[in-house]
Length: 259
Ligand code: ADP
Image 1 (cartoon, rainbow, N blue to C red):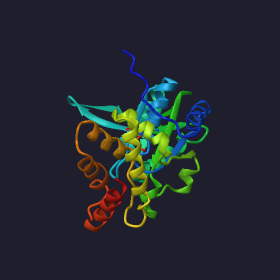
Image 2 (image 1 turned 90 degrees about the vertical axis):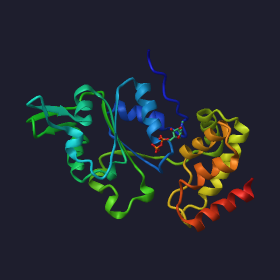
Image 3 (image 1 turned 30 degrees about the vertical axis):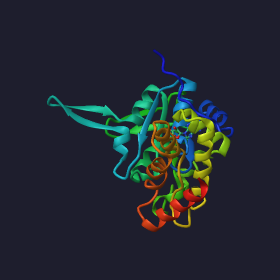
């Protein structure tokens, strides 16, 4: 059975931009805080366009060969096994590298020839030079908020992509998203969204990151499942944000005056 399209609520012209990028073979960079809908957007668009999606969550140990592939021992033989990037280049589809700045430096080396107009992936180990098909697209994301200088994208890499900035949606849109995802009624959801927006205002003073849409969905899901407001808010909107006692107290104070 065909899977239904992942639900995505657009916040600007990002769907059109994505379609144009795909048609014109332009690589796309999505910037924005964690949990604001970047991954959901990419899976929605892959479904809309009708191409497979190859997603890689990058981490600080991820190297170029994790993306391209490697020789593995299979029953006494060494067999070349494509990594997700190579698979996407061979078969077509969208390759999405989530949190790309986390990956090791050598990853940029394989991305560069893929992001210029030749769209090539050289596989040194097999001696192949793969040309990306028309329906291949590279999408990367990162969160500029908590990157330190060491971990921002180099201009030489960044300037190979068209880029779109994501942020948390306006209150009405976010209410629609959270109510749809959790099943909680829109009135009660709106109260939580307002609270989240107040808590987000504390970002920078004491907090690195504000409450994400993802956490709001969790909170509304707990309430919809029968948990009390206090508990749901504590476990979904306060504890995940900080370990510091004073900061928690500050957040709880905002909750007290809001409800
Ligand atoms: P990111 O990749 O930016 O860290 P995600 O795409 O995983 O964030 O979003 C986290 C969750 O928030 C999603 O699973 C979804 O429930 C919800 N979400 C956020 N923005 C949207 C949106 N615009 N439309 C639908 N759901 C959204």
